[in-house]
Figure 1 (cartoon, protein in one colour):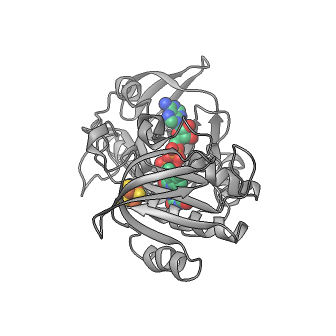
Figure 2: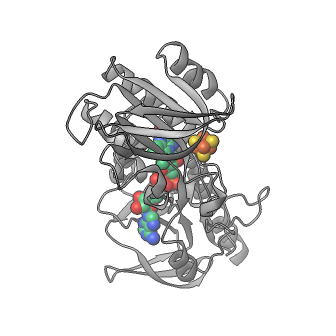
Length: 349
Ligand SMILES: Cc1cc2nc3c(=O)[nH]c(=O)nc-3n(C[C@H](O)[C@H](O)[C@H](O)COP(=O)(O)OP(=O)(O)OC[C@H]3O[C@@H](n4cnc5c(N)ncnc54)[C@H](O)[C@@H]3O)c2cc1C
Ligand code: SF4
């Protein structure tokens, strides 16, 4: 019986799973495929997080430091699990760096992959330099200056297009990515703060700033930061001929075509299943749900389980998720892994 839990993925979910395993007196081994820990908020350079307003590098940085400084946690970066043998209580994982890890249980905190807006070519990403993603815009906010990449001018108008790669059956993305409305409302305020002369428009189908986010982000961005919300269906983004971009679509409230020139267009990209999931499914022997995210065992009595006993999951690996919920699920998965290992020990007498 191994008193070790293998945690795959070092994002918010995996880091909290490892911290809980260690706090329970067990050892955790974290295997992260990238060179650094922290998951999407660090790897993609997010700016201030919702809802806390803290810079991602500080907030997630604290989570990283907590496990890096923990003597009960061993970390392998730039590594993947290539082979898994054994059973609950006694797994052996072979890593791409040639090492092996013995563990009683496994938590998959392997997260998601950002939607690549090149798959939505009519909206201009990849064609026009001044069409960016929310992650690129967050990096610009982090650098402290809002400029058009094409010629460095301060934009007079920025359009943020919601649901890019989400809620779009035509391209096989039926799900809502849950957090991008709130992230975009927040981004609009950050742009205005850094560049008061810039007007920000948000093009939406519906606004899903759930729970307390409605007031803190949606209304605040309109009332205090003058963000303009346009309910519209976007047809295409084209060049205007004077160096600007034209966002063309239909205003779905008044049912009229609208064409507005912008200096910058930002795609609020959604959360795809981790592109590694077919491999993860094969190596770990866990099922995927129909969109390609990790399948849950059972919602109410084993919400952090996968289809294979002894292997748990948490966070955006299961589907679009917020950081706060990914952290909670990571703690839950770590605790459940340890509890099930205790049960195996008791059973073995
Ligand atoms: C533009 C944008 C902005 C966002 N801003 C916010 C925000 O402000 N607030 C908020 O609550 N949420 C935000 N989110 C959502 C947030 O990114 C997720 O909630 C969070 O990253 C999920 O954490 P996770 O640990 O489950 O997954 P991830 O952050 O994706 O971490 C998964 C980790 O696993 C690693 N990994 C993947 N596959 C393997 C493998 N095969 N082997 C080993 N390691 C692997 C990855 O490299 C990564 O480090 C935003 C999302 C987007 C798209
Ligand atoms: S959270 Fe908002 S932007 Fe994101 S997919 Fe859902 S409705 Fe669209």
